[in-house]
Image (cartoon, rainbow, N blue to C red; front, side, top):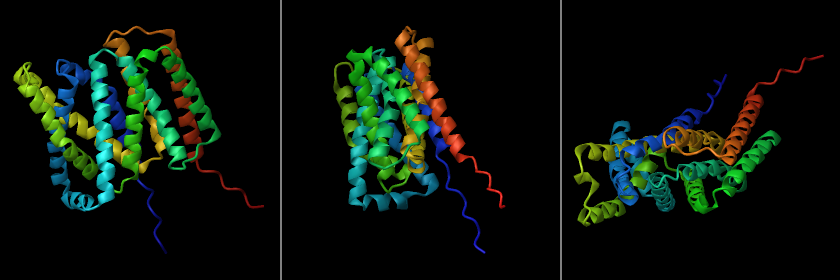
Length: 302
């Protein structure tokens, strides 16, 4: 008799971990707010690679990296995904430094809808009627918020589409989460070192020359970058992209609350309506997922 197959591992714990860390990322960015966005992203990439290499060594995944490097298509996809995530980082850090916390939050509210769009059109994923109702409700809330933020909408759209496309590419490439992130970091290393060197040679100097505390805070960026991206890449490979998109509402909601409580931004009626619509939509989406996973009672034999 064949043993029953064990269920495929769920990516939900990794998705929750990644989005919670990203939700609280603005608090970390407060520590490095005096570092220009381009310079910070350069150092962020520089310090992400050693973190990845240490984890690769611990997990003995160097053969996986060599195998990926021999795959030309995988390298091209990872080069594209590396470019997308670097654009996302620069825009996000700049937005937080400029006090555009709600614009950044809106970008990641739009992102789940981008995920659902990509999942249904490209990956041919299907949604139930209740889930489409949730999508429409979230879309209404986001449209209301976007209508009142047209001057900063480019920030939100750049964040949404860059990260949505990044996740789609990572889902489709046949490279493990950690080897893929390591290769992405290696691809971006030379441009990142060039940015860091340019700031070092500029009249204002490098942020590493300011203080030991700031230098250590910048170095922490490698850890805070590698860990959630690694968890996200694992989740993206294990979950439907549409479902992963709805889980992502967690991160901008945390950012939204931080905007009110820490950054002192004013809450407008449109923002409150958007917040309510999105969480009602998330509740409908989760309820439908749980309802469809309940085992059906066997039909009694007459």
